[in-house]
Image (cartoon, rainbow, N blue to C red; front, side, top):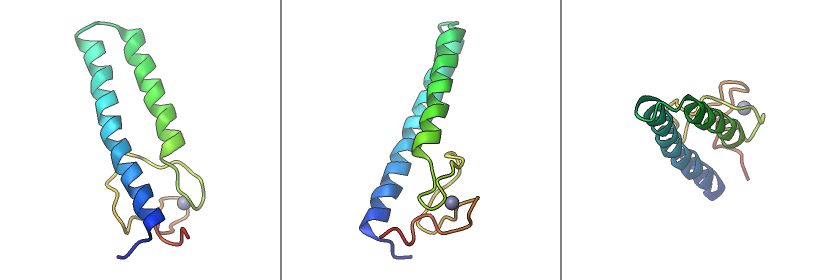
Length: 89
Ligand SMILES: [Zn+2]
């Protein structure tokens, strides 16, 4: 599927965020397991979820969707069923 430059930038942003998300979850797990710092782990988790709900939103209906699902050029929004990266121009 051919997508616009704007859509490609959005896809790149989502993919970058997916890596950041994994990193943050590992960080939370590490502070829980190694530092025994539950407050820090909880703080990182909350920060991650807030970030998810800000970054991972459908450009059509503005609803947040699960950032841990696989995302590709032809991925549809689970809420409005539109192609996320189509019709952005
Ligand atoms: Zn949507």
